[in-house]
Image (cartoon, rainbow, N blue to C red):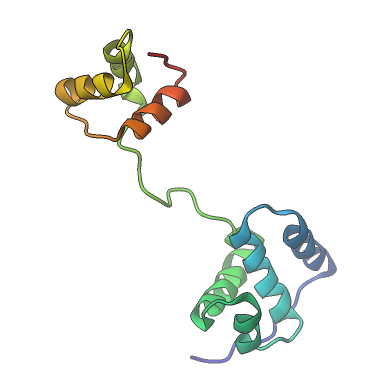
Amino acid sequence: MRPITKIKLSKDEEAELELIIKQDTRYRVRNRANAILYKSKSYKVEEITEILRVRPQTVYLWIREFKKEGIKSFYEKKGKGRKSILKMEYAEEIKALVINEPSLTVANAKIREKLNIYMHNVTLSRFLKKNQIQL
């Protein structure tokens, strides 16, 4: 792996990074911003890994992504994570099945039987709350 050259930041970029570090609520975003800021101030990757307690490969990845995409590389991309088993097109069918049911467990059993969708009661509860459907 070839060594990474120093990152040159403009005053505006540096100010934006410092603002992200101070104000952003997401730990990962702040960590990535910190790594780039440290690298721009001539810290070695080994020093950054000790400070942020991450692996060197992670820092190299963050730097490479920052060089490609800039500050937007700090944020999670759309489509990451597990996809929902309950689609919005099921909302009306589920509403019809669960309305006036005595409990979430009974409603879930009915959905399993009719729609062949297997889910935890908590998943169903979140779906109902999100779509403003009441039992």
